[in-house]
View 1: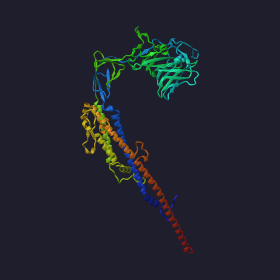
View 2: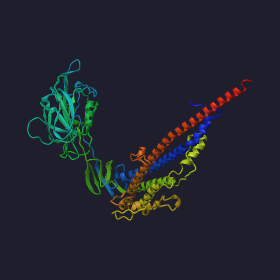
View 3: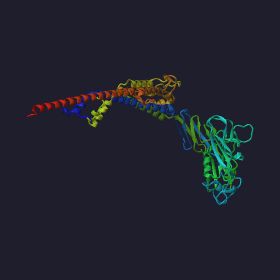
Length: 625
């Protein structure tokens, strides 16, 4: 702690503050200069964010979702029977549908008879081995464990192993070191690759497509052909066990091309019927099942509608064992409420209808014809006919273009505001000392003036705006033979008001007429593409201009393109330079302050000595009186 003025009586502290205030003026000016650069950097980044937002919106609306400029709408004379939507590629056509005799439906099957025995209904949340299925009788001990069964249950523990194939190969090892592997359960081993089941064989000889050889001695799988990289191999196998039980069964369905889809299920005795149904519902065979306690039957339905089995057989084929023999899902006949023998299968149907005079079928009720997606919702009666008319969705296209114009004008207002904002050069940034000397409201008004005009007449931003205007007003060459090749041709022109500095105006009637007359030509003005600038639509041109401008501004002010550290952009380096100068000057100020204190201290010492000498002389002259 320093104390001065004891000898001189001077307010040394105040004198030092006044002296250092004068000495600090260059530092204060550098701090103000740094603040101005930071304000400029923030202003540039704000403009860059606006540019980036506008660019992303244009890409989303006109390039990624180009359908907005080619939107179609479909009107139906009876939407309760037939509804439709159209893709942008659909033509403006009329379709007439009649004689809708059948809607596409999926095959369903239910148990041919009750599945429980001894009058005990099935409990879907109880272990299967404890349930009493008809035709699968068994005895239980006092602990509920199976002690005697028929052919439904087999002894063994079900295990599943998943192997990820790192590189292409046709050999995979499983159950390594497992000495409990049940080798006589080859028929109960299930091997799948990426969900597709392979046919298991054990003997020697050439493998055929879709087959896999299982060697229970070495624990090796040999596939026909090489598996792809990162293939996932799933192996379900059986271990020796006297306490655990299992059974098997399979389901075969067909895809849209008539190819078989098979899934073999190895079912544990400890599983519940609900768990089995969950596995069924997740399986790639595409079925769903449930148990109805009222009828004591199981119902199972194919998820895919229509006829997929090209041979005309059933859509679902159940293998021997649990599904066919226990759940009674075999083909058969039952007696309905009227005493008639009816099949326990509701066969799949294709949708049958006539379109523009041609009778045809579809496997689903929703299908696409020449870009028009049609959904059949009901059957027609007699000569009833439903008309579908496809036309350009003028309102949607108009709203998309109007949205672009509004966004562009909004951007123009913002940027022009920055370029024309008044610059008050007499209002410098406030130092902390200056800010403390005025009120908070006065400081806010001062800051507002001081920050104004940071980008006034900025050449870099003005250049971006000039290039965008050129992009918008330039002609677009296309090979469509369209009369529309620039915005003015479709009713979008520049405002005649000079003060609006290039804002766009829309003649709504002309724009709607252009959309209805030539929607493809209108769309090409915006999103056409080609090797030259003249062949690119205005959106692609503006995107390139904005990308270039954003990169240039980022090089100057940072904030985008990975330029976040000060040394990566111009203004950041300028700030670092000012910081270095401030640090060096602060060091010199400390030296100056120390020098002043030494001088004041020397003065105080000299004055103290002078005072002491004066007191001594006074004492000698007048001390004897």
